Image (spheres, one colour):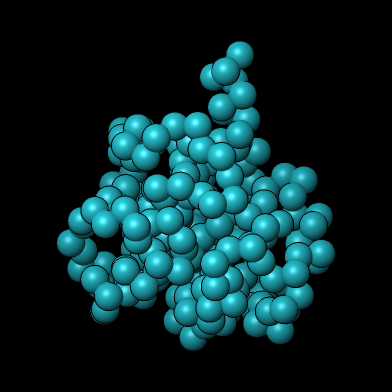
Length: 192
């Protein structure tokens, strides 16, 4: 586990099956737009809503060796039960790093099934969330059940650098630059 004196950390969680330029792009964009100190990638043991082709150790190792900047770290939570559900990851990190302010980072495509995540309302109420635009997915933002529920908690994009100071629930839709890369696309390329 990383010992950090950094105060504002963006968390990008996922299966990273495989890690790709889209993960890196969101991470770098978050560092700049949200003015964060670091980004931590948390590789989940499994995603209950997806079939994962590769085992956890393989995905964790691939994320660790993926080219990143010194401000993007891959953290390993040794208690793998704590990495199945996002709410458990957040509880674990808050307990381990009580003086650190975390911001959840996600691509807009994650909104489609977010209402199926364990304790999805609790996630929104416990951490500020930055949702990053991805080509073709952003058209469905307004249809999201989650966004409908938390519509009045959205902050303006021009205030995205203030998100880290806000008490949840608070979220921002970060648009502008986008990256079309996806793990599904990468797996299809590998399987060909």
